[in-house]
Length: 490
Ligand code: ACM
Image (tube, rainbow, N blue to C red; front, top):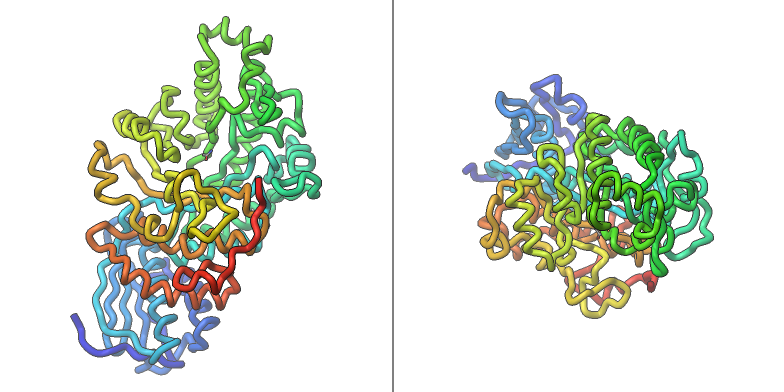
């Protein structure tokens, strides 16, 4: 351990030891300059930031940082690692700028607990647009979150342009949860490419979700010929698994999606099909399918559909993600991964682990950020509990994990921002921050080194970052100072 401090000053200089780091350096030179008014080239003896790639794992997120009085040295065997090291330095400098402009000398050897550190945003229920999404990507990057799961289709709205089926966006994009008459809102393919590139530059992979066979009302309004019906509470909820044309239609859609998103995954949802598959029982095409394939009930029809679509995804050279309902569909675990979200279905989690599916943990409590985080709040969901900051930070606890086998299959954790009740940017901020900070640290830090008090101290610095960026976070230290913004009451 070094003693003393690194004093940064206007003449801060950079020493970039590997050509592969030029882009990362460029990004941070700009960030540091914009944020801290420090020059990026300087005198020979000016304090230095040195970044250097070492030999070893090119995929790792680990990095090492040594702060001494004249220099900060960040090393990693991967560009991601260097990027995360610089994000840590950014936060240290940010804290210091608001204090005595020094960083205590130290040696850090840092690596994440999980390779998957995710945030899901539902833009079907409410649409926030490119600028807000890019801001979220910036905040994710600052927190070393590396996965953005984008829930682009659901009942209220279809939010992605598909060239072969233009009505999906033009007709299916109309309306949202709080206003069925809202004009069509969706991302053009050009915008999607821009956002994907923006995220990539920040080491964030975007996983698109096209939800099926349920949660399909918006699509069915655009192309009713592929509708499989719904229920009174969930009209036009499903695609029709009995029509061969449905598989072609959905595969054509996924082909365009596959081209837009470089990720190896496509998420095909698969959740809550029972909400609205009643009409399958009487649909002549579904009946024919059942007879032909020997499918004894609607659950088997659902699993048949999922297997067909998994084949399509594989034919597009991608892998499948699904919600935990797909557990017993018999999908091959070498091409399929699952997100466990129903916190009351622990047996199923255990089954999924036994079946060796790569698994992401995102249980409603505490990782659904549409849930209330404080007893004074009234617009969020509760369903028997809060998803407050300490609970988010503590997840997954040793106690939770102690009961599980095959824990190596747990690839990470993810917070899901469902937006039925989040009608605008202000409320989106409020529900996201600072819980995102707690989730990020929970995903990065092993239980033994987690320290909630230390987290709270650092959170104060994060609050100044939120304020500088105009983000309306929930102030956990002084709840009455940040009144709850109105939400949409369902
Ligand atoms: C879900 O919350 N329906 C995955």
